[in-house]
Amino acid sequence: MRVVPADSLVAFVIAAAVIIVVPGPGVLFIIGRSLALGRVGGLVSVLGGALGQVPLVVLVAFGVGTIVASSPPLFLAVRIAGSAYLVYLGVQAIRHRRLQASTDAATLPPASRWRQLGEGFVVGVTNPKTIAFFVAVLPQFVAPAAGSVQLQLLELGLVFVAMAVLSDAVWALVAAGARAWFGRSPRRIQTLTATGGAIIIVLGVALLFVGGH
Image (cartoon, rainbow, N blue to C red; front, side, top):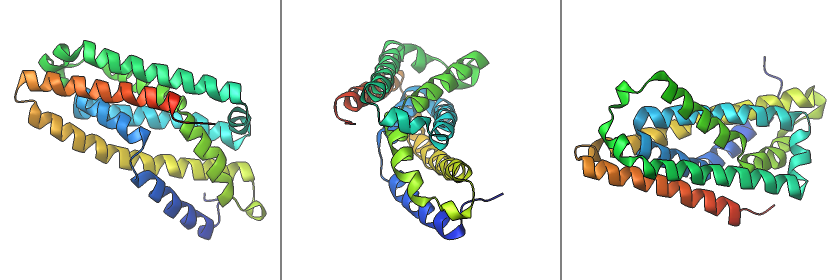
């Protein structure tokens, strides 16, 4: 059941589409994961990241996100945790590039996919830019006279997550397509996997030193 007024929802979708279409840290992460892990790994990472954003939507809707965003120490802690985890994932991709090049994605055990899902979740839930976006943008499209502010924030946040999933999935498929083309040579796939890991490492460092409060 829709809570947000139609005009506010349309305006939010337009604003969110503009923000989502412009490649940002989330897109770079998905591209790096898709280059390192392939199509399924990239899509699983997209799903994990989306699941990680859901708790952020809930926290922002009920005020906790605002507390984190307005507290420099807490916000810095989230940035450090998210950046460190990205660097860790990038290093792991580079370390295991030979294994990725020699392993058929279809033969990976379910545990590996669950791990990839969990890794995407951690990146999604520790993304400080997502917290800042939800805190700064979502309230601007809420109409208090239309009903519960919390429910409207939840609806807007989930709409954004759904839109981001579709966009990120496209990027994952495009990047995985490039990996499939390079995959004809084990040496080239090793290089591509290492490149994906390097992209994730650079992203982690950039988020730590570039993104301000």
